[in-house]
Length: 75
Image (cartoon, rainbow, N blue to C red):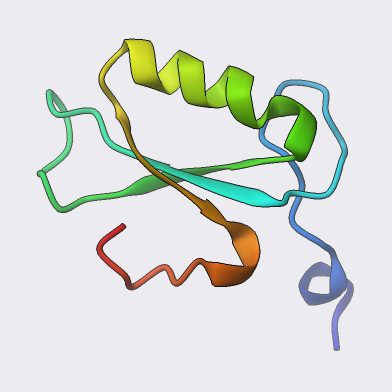
């Protein structure tokens, strides 16, 4: 197993190095097709902040626990 595969996913918040616990699925309707989902990862501390950031822009589509996330699911 290589070291990249062994690393745990980290929170996407600027400067945060905590383990990710949540997947925030989003898209920008001005740029992405409706079915497209981009993802940010969040630790428990930053989940609400990142969700609000995406939500006020109308980008947030779903928040799912990392353990339950499947990248091929339609979020």
